[in-house]
Image (tube, rainbow, N blue to C red):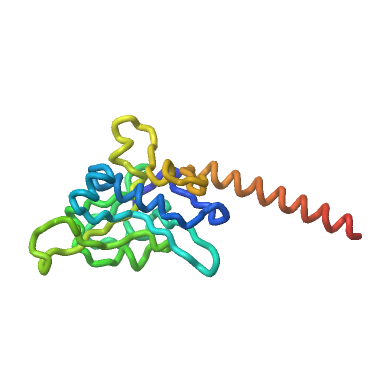
Length: 189
């Protein structure tokens, strides 16, 4: 079993999300190896690695949470999904398109899709697992995160967080809520 350090992941605040899908477009363009005008003029069909979903009256983007002891990595029969010291990664060359990863992901963050821009034989072409990779290809040169979806969000509803800082912030916010609730009940008494 891989022992991973506290992971970075994308956090989305549904209270701030407009459902504009700028994050989907930015993700798709970031992984297309071209800019949006080029993709449009060449007729490329862009594939985001995140998705904006609506549940009742709330919308929010869904991305990989880079789980520690990731179920997708544990379930992958070929080892195409694996965990290194900080991230859950996919080696698409080893992926057989079995979709086991999509079944075990608790966040619905993995898709298995064919490369729709590949002009090979569509009948024999298998899909490959894809998910948010925190725009790793954009960051490996500088060692700084530059997630396209975070940069594109007009309301800053999407943030890159590390698990430990996120957990501390949640504990602090819950503590403040308890203090407010306790103060509110004292004023009523």
